[in-house]
Length: 203
Image 1 (tube, rainbow, N blue to C red):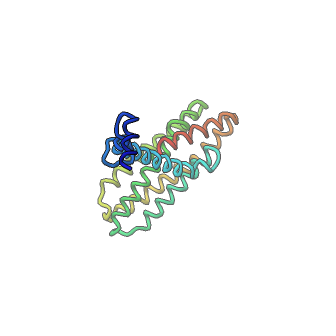
Image 2 (image 1 turned 90 degrees about the vertical axis):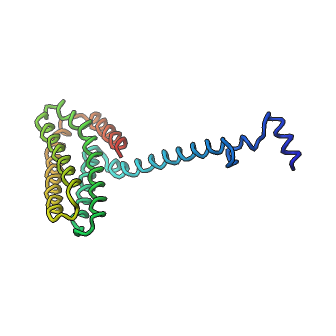
Image 3 (image 1 turned 60 degrees about the vertical axis):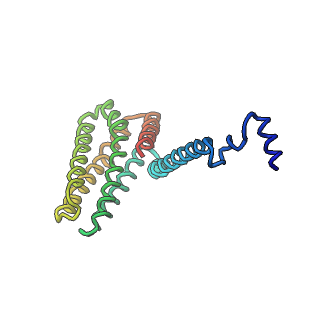
């Protein structure tokens, strides 16, 4: 067995064991493991992005997709409002999830939908909605920096939820339908593609 190994090694100008990615004592193994680990991490992140964005993208056009995201984030608020003062870790986790969901959502609206509103003479509506996104950041900042067992914390969460709900109703019931009436089917499809792309980027 050893003779056969040596003859193979000599025909390839070096030990085959030194070049095997499966030889854990070799440099190749370490490099292979590093590359494999990086590829696994990239694949896992890609899978997470597909799963997160797939839930809203599967809803159809951009307006339905954004409405689904509204519904999902309001459901997170409801879970948060069901917590008790001693569930500080759960409160912090849910608040972080809400922050991520709203950040992803706002990115798609601010980079795709609101510019379209401005181009189609709905500048005032775009400005108002974008200003409300700024208020979201203020709420998140206050809640992150307040003790999660503070008696006033859950009241501020309820106020925050009401603000997000009003914003969502304005978009779903008034602004988005008006924009869809003004644009072509081709533009509608383009906005859908761009919203999905932006959502995937931020997922």
